[in-house]
Length: 509
Image (cartoon, rainbow, N blue to C red; front, side):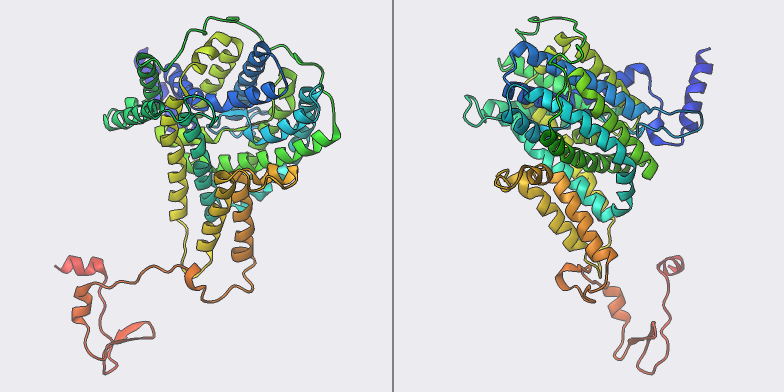
């Protein structure tokens, strides 16, 4: 019976044409899924914390907001990874079926803060109403948005993937130092030490040579790092038992959504940014896993994003999007199966229903996350560089496209104040390094590679040709007067000099 079951399992694996469909045991799926949740946990709880505090919500209700965001993120992840289709032998209408974790998008935080600060009384309900309408608009335009995939050749996707990794590095740094420069303990050397210890543990586990341990290196290192923090008195689990153990998110717990036109317009701009970023994440994870994506698949992924966004306010949550940091985890662990991420979605739902588990995870020191983040986000950057290495740079303007786009994307990441005196809609679009780099790369690719009229024949410094070299044994056989004529090497008398292929030459030795 066992042999039959294992042969059936191997049959599933061999029949699976797509790397993302790899079958995993339930235990493995949930272990890798938990690793995904720990990686993005800080990112998913930050928006409800920030928005709830700005809206003047009491701590207990902020807990409700956080639990709601975890619950909705879990449902959205299941929709994105498993897909929803209507009929047999048809691709899903909702969900890219790729290993992408969904959660509250950070892209909308600045806009939501502006809405809350505009009116403290109806701020939260205005946000919920704006998210519903913007999500429905996004759902309507998702198929048209997917058409832009043809504007994402490797020179563009390489730029976007590299920028995703680079723009996440400040997140890792903030996890290590703390987010508030004036707070006591900011940039505490002990926290830097905890991050370094976690990072060293990941390196050691990756070196061990055991594939299973290496793949779980992030999760194990987080646990080891947390134990180390407890031993040196830098982790506090005393408040874990305070508050309810189980709680189902109450629909419209903060009141019925209200619809403010200005809020809806600004949130629609946020949705356009989210569509751009999710398209980039779909292309990035496809590049890492070796999966094939076409316009229909991107459209299905964007629809999952937008339907999750439109329904999120029912359960007191906000705009949903794919999480870039988890793309890095896929690259590090090489676990390409979407079922691992689907299990992570189930873990998020459980965390949303059992606030006590959320309190355990949130007690983990952020410095531990920071140490892991250095590897995770760096791996995304490296994946982008690997894509850019496939791009040809000779006799074209690809070098200036890459240089300008990455630099343009990094400017708001390095200096958040650069667009602070611009209109809010402009800040929403260009404060995101990912959307800035993506738009610049698409635009420059069109200008230099699609509309080639007017490009210089010899693009000088921007058309980087490789340094030419010739082997000394080739120079030794050349004689005075040898030259190339009509593609052939001829001597001083104009007679052709025979040229042997490397393979032919080596076979004669």
